[in-house]
Length: 258
Image (cartoon, rainbow, N blue to C red; front, side, top):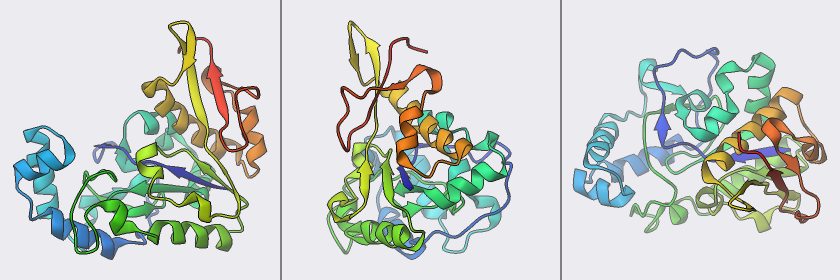
């Protein structure tokens, strides 16, 4: 199967990484086009575009200004080790052995507002540009329009090339919207993680994000190929709930918050 995940707003370019192998992003030239547009924006325009603080807007203006089509190695890092935050805490790629990282490289694709789609070991430069940003460009008025069918076509080609029989969608709604799931002939499963809170089961954002990363880690550690095996996922108290699940929406519930 092929696994989809969102990137993270936070980045970590400081912590030592365990693997030196790297690859190049498929859509680097498209990323350069977007950077060209973003680099023309003022701090205030970036602040309004991404709904961020003035300090973060200034930081990202500097990042766009410093962005290079051929950056020096010190300015890059493999995507799976660069992204930080709840999802990637759950994924814990830095603690994986070589086999686990190689599994990620073969099975995991990270959607990105700037790079379109990334393999885990693709090198990226520090950036922040959410898929939902209304960054006007020569192609469209926003990033969904810019990426158009590029991401979906790439994923279809990857599924065929690697003979994958299913797509595991662990991306957030914002990022999943860039993919036309109706175009796939294979099974597409979108897990939902719910915690018991205030007398009922519901999605708790912090825990759900971490759980999506944990499911990717579970796949890597167990070298999962058949999506039916994911019904056995039981990390940190989550259990598959057959009664609340549908063909494409698999529900995992946890009674006790961790």
